[in-house]
Image (cartoon, rainbow, N blue to C red; front, side, top):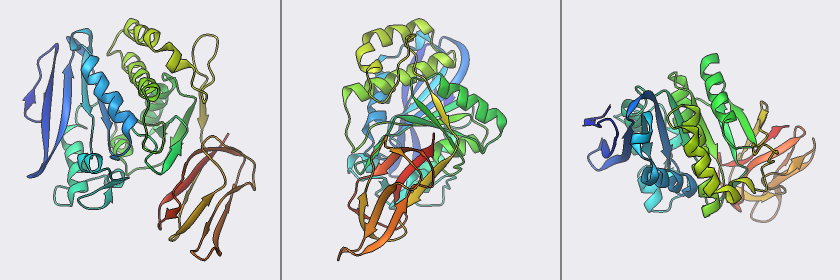
Length: 333
């Protein structure tokens, strides 16, 4: 197995650095299994204050044994180190760009574009699957769910949806996005998922363990790890992984997963004070108030009502919002 200029021998793992520019590199951990198999790319930290995925990836790097694996896994724990260490919500601090809107990248662009180009150049090639871990940033709350792509062809959609179904998540949401780390991978023919969990830039051991289990479930689904290892991990974390209030646990221990095909995404049309009338997981009826944006003097600028019966998947809690900032995502269910 070779990533960038680093060769990783069968049955071993190795840290490596992928160059972005003269001042920045991506720190990744590559696992080469003892037998041939699929290659999985796992990324986190696209947004620097989304900690649950970062910690889950870090834990797996510490505990996985490549000798028990088939195939290959490359972990990128923190795609946006500047945002992580400087505690910047959403953006890469060097250029003020949302990294998840910087794909496809270019080596001739700013820091975000260069990071995107490095991911595309060194991590996409040879990948059989990619998963990108997110969580609610310091201004957001989300219901745990998986985005899967439906704008990259039938094969990519089917393989991504099948992988989502293998995870203990209550919801999988169809996405037509094309310019994020995972969605651009899908456009390049790589089945991919984006996972969401948590919020307010916080993390708990319970949430980290839930993501760990999701990753183990994916590794088993791709036949990289044997199911016996997943059962062992679930046994150690049974209470945390199966008592989540947002998940319906069936007698078999499986979570009933539902697919959402119709979504609505609201963004602030201008700067103002945001007053949400909902929270993550809120059930909606058509016409229900979602929230309002008001001016400094309290006068109404915009009022949002639900266009359908459904549920809120994520929303922002920030009082001050700027033009283009996501406010609410809700889906028909």
